[in-house]
Figure (tube, rainbow, N blue to C red):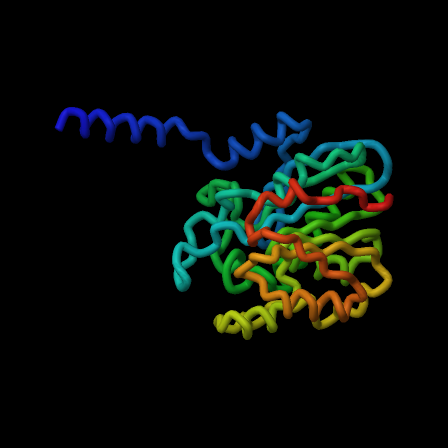
Length: 263
C-alpha cells in the first residue's frame, strides 16, 4: 500500500513539473533562435514564434488541427497539438531568411486570458472568418520581418489554410504541404464525416495555383487523408503529389522534408 501511495505521489509530482505546452514551445523555439510573438485578431489571438533573418522572404509554417476534439463529437478544451509537426518543420529549417511558426486559433494560449470560441478550432476552422484572421496574421508577420515574399508551408489542416491563403494572396512564391487536407468535400465524403457548412475548400479554386511552384507530400500509410483527394487537388493545381513510403499522418516530417524552395 505504501509503495502504491509513493508511486501515485511521484506521478503527481512529475505531472506538476511538466512544462505547459506554451512554455515547451517557447523553450524549443528559443533554442533555435525564435522568439514568441502574439498576434491579436478579430477571431482569436494567435500564437507565433519568429526568427528574423536575411533577405526579403518569409517562410510561414502553419500548424495542423491539433487536439481539436476530445471525442469524435466533443470539442477539446484545449486544441494545442500533442506533437506540433509544423513547429518541428520550422525549427529545422536551415535557411537564413526569416521563418515563422503560426499556430491555429486556440492553440498554446490560456483561453481564460485569450478567449477563443471552440467553433474556430472545430466546425468553423476553415471558415472565411478564420481564413481572414490567418491572412491578417501573415500580413503582420510579413511587416514585422520586413519581408516582401512568402513561402507558405502547412501541415494537415494547416495545409488547407496554406492553400486557401495562397489562392487569395499575390505575394506567395511557393506553397508546400505535408499530409495536407487539400480537398475538404472529398475528405468529408471519403471519411463519411459530417458536413462543414461555411468551410472553404482549396480544391474549388485550385486551378488558380497552376503557375505557382508547389510541393505536396503524403505518407503511404496515412489513414487520415485519402490519396484520391490529394491527387484531385494536385491535378487541378498543376502540381505533383509525392508519396513518402512508410509514413503515416503525424510522423516526423522534418526528417524527409526538402527545405530547398528554389529561392
